[in-house]
Image (cartoon, rainbow, N blue to C red; front, top):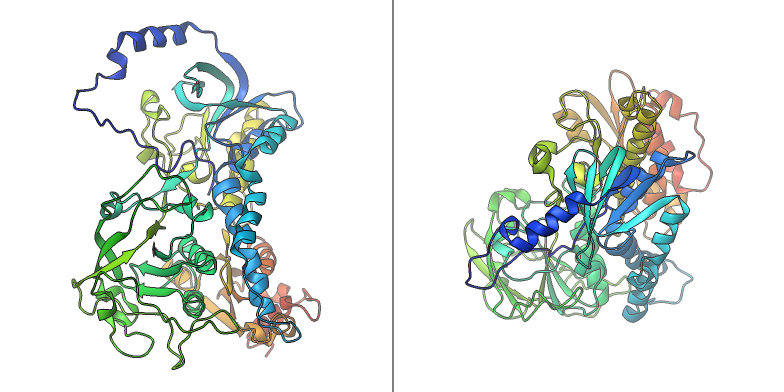
Length: 578
């Protein structure tokens, strides 16, 4: 996630019955517009709209080591979505849970080690600087970048207008380039738009923990939020439209995460979706991180073909327990005491999983105190004046710079979530560095497009999911490679077969996989599931970027006893060396 101009619930509504006059037709608006047009513009070499990590990097790399100038326009907080509402607060909440899980699975430690909800939220507040961006603004100035607070929009070629919070307008001209790094916003399914549901900001910024929480989605945000919300005391039910979690990862990753979440007391319903929702006491102005009104009623329907196994999935106990959702009572959960590992498995070994409605199209009712929507994000490109320069948001998706068939003019760049690429801060920062170098190259009379050419290197996207177990992967999965027509060989290994990995927890488990192009022996993908795998990922990323072969990798000696010895187990799967 990257910068975002505006909040998740920025909408324009007119509650009165009087027809609103278009802005341009109002006399006061015409006078203000004329005054703006006559006002002299401030001039910088580069103007970046969006002051999160992606925008910061683009501006920094465009002027670093030179006398060029840059303005960084931000409507909310410098540091953007990542610093206050996404990456940093979520990991601040999740890392203590990793430590607790590890401690509760190690002999020699007095158990149980427990979560302190108040202390956990206080840690979150420290890591987001209590939502104060003074430090981020100070960094901006220290990098030679001029911060400009307000909402920016393109007013013409190389021209940006910034509306301040006081209603004033500044005109800023860019000699070289304008960069849009405006981030993304949550996608809210139509059936859930009238209930003032939580978005990811509410989940990371939680202040009042709802007793019963439904999470709509089965991706990264849904899985991570289910973990920390359950640890804070919510009874969590995940509503997953498909048949698995983490659909873009290797299948064994989603299976391991689902099993772990159930052990933590999370209820997962696969193959269901909310066809409609009711919340008579919805309060969209309640504030971030508190319930947005009274209880919400979700009317669920089964997508039986999406459930695991292709039909109505049985419950963990083996029965079709769809009746658990057929009334207006609180969500049924196993109320047995939590075990040493924090799980809530019943005495008969059953988990908190329940089946979806038993027949496709059959409705069920779920009542919860809050609904968290985690169904993806979309680029924020509205209100940026693109139509005024003959562009539309739809045609810009996937484009970063001019050249080839790109609709972008040579002075305009899109980067990060705004470009519709992988919505990951580290990927956006990588692309922002390329954008900054491209602008610097153009200013020096060189070809800016060359900055985007990786040469012989591959450009895989690495990703870590901070669940328990951690899930880390880079490059292509086996299924994605085969779907693309690549002939691959897969090498699997038990993660705990490496002594260093087994030492991490007494019950350490997991799986690792290498995806190798059959014809060349080059590594094109790697996945790791298990404790501590996040710190293994960069070595795999380097190997994939460098198009390294297994023959080369077998000469990279991992230290003993570390989890990185899993590379030896994976290489041992190669027939030539087994």
